[in-house]
Image (cartoon, rainbow, N blue to C red; front, side, top):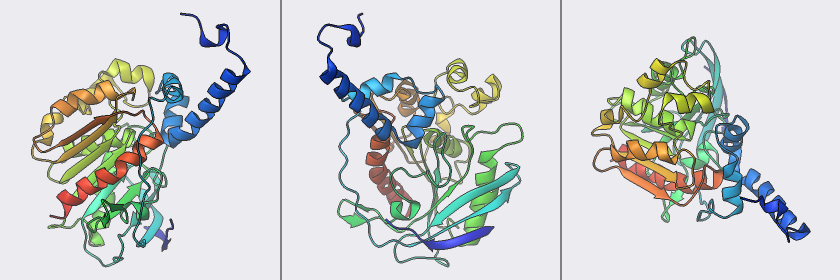
Length: 319
């Protein structure tokens, strides 16, 4: 494992109607630019690949994507390490970032969060609007989170499920987590949780379904879940290698495997993936938290949901 250590800082078309003048054009044009900025890396990548429809831009312009997001506050940051290792499971070198909470560092024994990035992202963009070190230094509800470490890693763009010659799930479970445990993180009796946004949110749920004895809690923000293989293949042909692979890695039909695992799922009503999220949400075990509210598949929604999601994991990983 190669490392580089340091501390991280802080009917008729609208345009053809009478009266659609320069002012309206400028208003919509500037709104579209703001929409692009608000979408974030994940949202823009999904739209550019045809996964998200252009309708989301209109939703932002019309205000359906607005979410309340209080200012983020952090305790003094703990140390953070970034580096690479060769993954046998993925047949390539992958990057990672490991961050410690305030007051802790190498040698500390702590619970561990495995944070999975979204489509088009990597270990550097897994957490929306902040660094991994900031994520575990967040102050939520006026106080600090219980101490937890967090690790992010490159999973590629194939939905965190196994593909021929590339198995990001095995990379996490068989390579990344053992490396972290060797450092004293997530080693029993300390717990491991999984969290993700968009494609990473789907992955977080899938990982817990596949390995319910390994992952003690799950937080999924705007999970990118499709209701059928046909829908997934039309939107993103690289997500699943075949219909059989979709059936094997379908987070909806395997939701029963989450029994006994605390799960928090957040999704915006105007998120194109929301219909696919509703089905597994109904099958979640008692004690789970389902937060359906106004919002789209945008960076603003992701950032607003990170503090309560991290607080949820802190409650269940550190008790």
